[in-house]
Image (cartoon, rainbow, N blue to C red; front, side):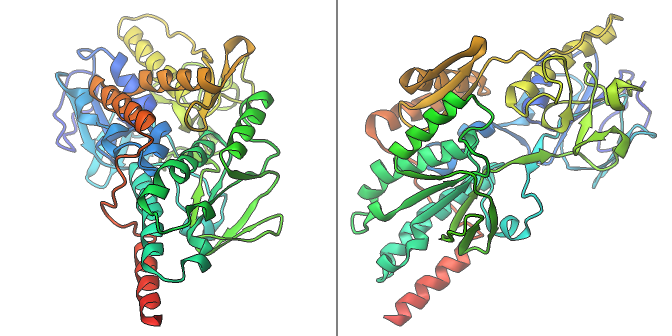
Length: 451
């Protein structure tokens, strides 16, 4: 039973206590399927909301408001007796003591579920980490939206706009779904929105450049879908650079491995993520930075040996190998969703003295959109969709996985408005991006003084 230790303002209980770290896809689906009267549940997350990350790029490109892709985590515990949320970051896990350590104190657990997701991977490149725009959090998307709009506002103020191509160059690194979708959204802004907002500027000079280190677009999808996506991107005016690594970026100049330097004030980093595992997990349980788990999501040694019965990991921070996926399950939202639901059902079985069931990932397909009426989909059974059919499937799938009826309604309404009006209704600089505010302000003042 849970230790009689009163901390984080969590009351003592006779029930077993589950501590859940993280309110991402895995975490919220674990909560959805867990019976409320069997355990005391404590949710810990450094934010008080869940983020629907696949649509962050639409916030960044003025297609959606941030509350369309984020929902309060406290709503998940409404009406659940003995369930609690604390907005805290876990600093360390002490397996031997069965405790998690936070800035507000420690908390004991009977069962620990680590669903802390992933974080941006800059592959050790400090210059890129300092100057690039990532796409992992709502704040990242808002920063990027402000930066994009600030660039054009600055061009309207300065008089030498034709000599400032760096403000019109937008470089996206990484040709996975996020990178491809960002490029498609920027291309739609260039074609339909920006010329109306800034008629005094020559928007045709705007360049969107996609840089990918591998030899094809959407490398995790089929070759057919990758080629189709590349075709869509090029038709939309995106310049695609394959087999090209990004070596450095100082805030002004991108240095790719092909030697063709690109002047830009905006580099969007969509090139990869890495597991976000709290401190304290012994190295023997880690594999490539992720927590190694068996088919029941229990942390374990190599080949599933010596599992820790009361500590689980799921989603992007977990490394699970199966017969169908001997190299490990892919880092996709459906994996986290299915693992969260499955583990919750197993926790119910545990209280009912039933055996755990092994997890088996069901691949329901991978999708990516490249803008209006253009998407690609790899579906089970080697079926592939593209064009309008792929775009409709992409929309339906994303609406289905959004949390809450209100959110689904708001997003669908925004999509329909954008589709029929060719408009983006949230082109607002609510707060200037901290990465670009000072630089742009200095450049505007300098240009005005020069005149």
